[in-house]
Length: 369
Image 1: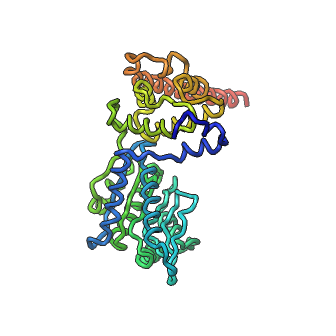
Image 2: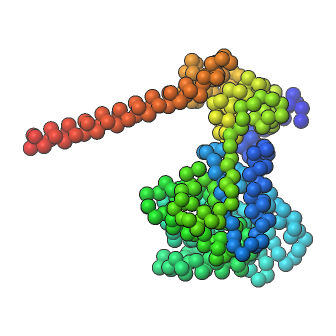
Image 3: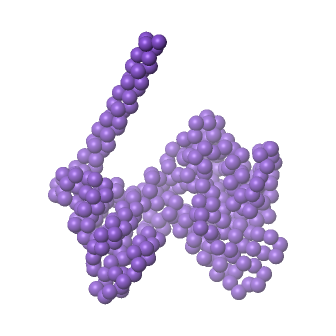
């Protein structure tokens, strides 16, 4: 598309924002993660027991994006497989991507080859079973039903619905929950699905989610080699993942005038600002685009990037990465980390001062009684 022709400027702002927010660039890292999930799907029932595959990475590394893109593509593939058949219908995935299932309606019931659930922030042994069962079309599990009864019901549904892969996202919530037995119990769910139901299990989350393997030796035995979603390397060569990613995003920006996200100096600064994580970069670009559209700017240029940090993130000019020379950009991560530590110390001092004031006030009230 010729960016000089009037196209985006005549479209509603909501359509322009939606375009960039829904665009996904298939980087080498995303393709590698998708390939790991596809292998798990393809190797279903090749062994007497299922496997447990972990995908880990930092916040906004692109883990969930990879999982969702794989599910969207797998859903489209299965739709094509069933096209033209009168005896079966592939249902839409639905709006809530946190609880997705690829669902095939047949004359004898439903098939769900892939099920995805998001782990609750306060997960319990029974709730994990209940979430999976609800996503598989079995809602309203009685609370009095025992864990063994839930397990037998789930195993039967997995067999009847020919479920190949069950995906658990945000698994680190298990490690973060205060229940000391949570990691072991959740590991038991994953182990049971793999061993008893012969289902492939995919667990996705922050690196400390793997505490479930430390807590449950049987989980360790079923684990495949972990897959880590790493940040981009800070490489400005034309073939680098970082440059190709931002160049692809730049082509998709909803403006008629050319933007500058493919410029090496801009790529460097966006990468450093977002620690080279694909998800963080994408989120930053989405926010800048929203900012530029709201201000009726003709494109995302250096001035727009600078103004976004100044006006929306309240970054002073002396700390604005888009105003720093190349020599200072190299020092930017250490500078940001130092600022973060100073904010933490200031917050801790405020809390300590407030606590002291409360103690003083209580003691004064006691003396005055």
